[in-house]
Image (cartoon, rainbow, N blue to C red; front, top):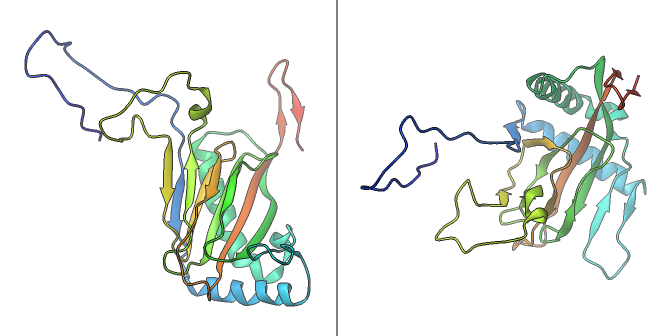
Length: 223
């Protein structure tokens, strides 16, 4: 609960309330088996060694990205199962009508732990998410930016940052932690300060629904 300063004198409203309008939720939790991260890392490095996916050109800060269909790789099934359950719970919380839901794309990044990744969103999906597979100490954290930041015509100075005026949320990386959020939320990877002898490894994914949306003037068949 946010503590709102209250004046000690003067006229005040009675029965006061505060409503949080149109919040942007993010859901997070830890994998039930952290050892799964090590098994996934082994498979990802096999894909990298086999030349599948793509790497940054020589001379740039190292980053390797796998193909974006990891949801079909047998070794990824235990992670896929967790993603499907948790994303289904989130869609239920939103009360989204659907026939089913599925992972549209799933890929991994093995990168220099201090490499930045610019602000972006994941289009053509409802939810986006990631799982931290390997997180060297002080590696780059994930930052989330409020969409309202791009609609501000006036920005006052603040005495301090709090839940009402902040437009940036930074999530510290932690091995085995999963994050899921509405796909329209912009996010980025900030500069790290880790020992560059280790990689930062993240699996990212997108979630979409199947079904017939019968909204008048906005009907679409996603079956």
